[in-house]
Amino acid sequence: MTRLYPLLLTALVVPASASAQHVTAGCTAATPHRLIVTVRGLRTGGGDLRVQLYDEPGFLQKGRWLARVEVPSDSRRSVELCVPVPRPGTYGIAVRHDANGNGKSDGGDGGAFSRDPALSLLRLKPAFAQVAVPVGSGISRIAVTMNYRHGFSIGPDR
Picture 1: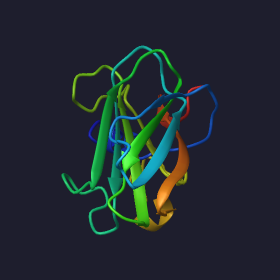
Picture 2: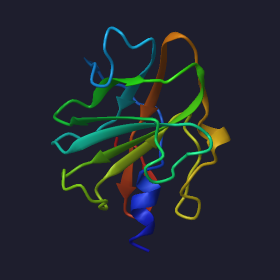
Picture 3: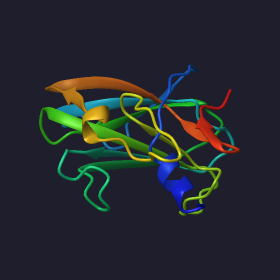
């Protein structure tokens, strides 16, 4: 059962609010297609934050992400990250907060997906269609809310 929690926690999203700091990691002025991902509801106290961009064929398959942005997490409850997109199209976003920064999945880690798919301990990974977002030329934006384990349930911190 403990192996299920890391999978679940890498797959969660629900809305919350906080002031965001913009981080341009992953994008440059020359990046023609960008997805600005606002990550809300982060637990404070550190660790690492990772945002991965997937297309449908590679969705949630190890090493099959198209773009990956990693930044240290600090006391902010919300942060914006710029994810480079290879071309306009339909993509899915997976977010992971490695709360203790140890590089391993633990019960205190959080997760999120684009479009807030409904998840449960029995259904840990959404289908690509549930997280798919259109990304056009230039800058597109989405927001996700982190979810964390609370006993035997998963949800945003309150």
